[in-house]
Length: 91
Image (cartoon, rainbow, N blue to C red):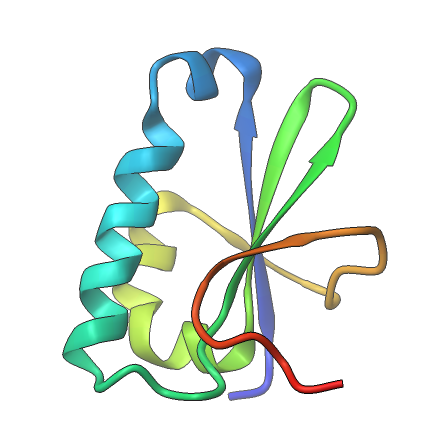
C-alpha cells in the first residue's frame, strides 16, 4: 500500500474540535503499532478548510480510522504542511 489519504475538515468541524479527536485516535494507532518511522500525519490549510494527509505508512496502521472518517486517496501534499504526528522526515 503506497497510497496517501486526505481528510478535509471545515471551519465548523475545527470549531467543534473534530480534528483533535481524530489526532488522538491516530496517536493511539501510532503508538500501538510501535511508532513506525514511515507513519506520519500532516496538516495543511486551504481556503475555508483544514486538510490532514496520512502518509502511506500512516495508512497501513490506521486504515480503520481512515475508512471510518471517509478520507480519500490523494497525491502526496504539494503545498506547505506541518507535521502533526510521527517522525520528522529526514531531508
